[in-house]
Image 1: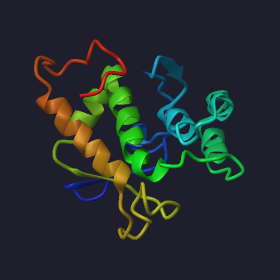
Image 2: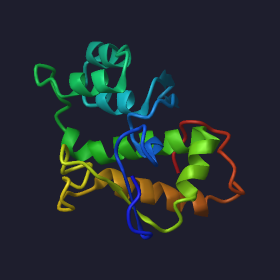
Image 3: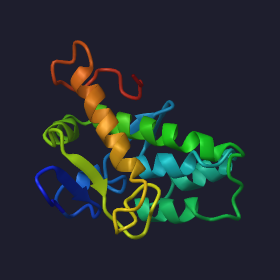
Length: 165
């Protein structure tokens, strides 16, 4: 979903710029493991239990991974609130450096404000009314800036998947 020329709103994977969503089906390699999507990785990292992480890794869809990640019968890492933005940043960096087409898409957004537009989430998204924190959009814009500034990349995908700046 695209709006004004200085903003790009996205949410559903089958709509314009849907590849920016963590539900987009692009495999990432991070922390010495291949993950079906960045959503799988993010949700699994909420938990200290290797069994919980493994269960989420095995999810057949990103939606299923997200549902398991919201299950509060599972014990969250005690410091999750202080970790979550960095975990998301790592997942987004991996996704956009390991897939050249995604890197090109992100760079093609220029200086537009990227907004995960959904009333379902006021932390990662805009809350549907623009009042949310839009942390995913802000992290995408940070990654876009780092991709532009990365020395020696010449606009090409990095050769070290899973390495962070």
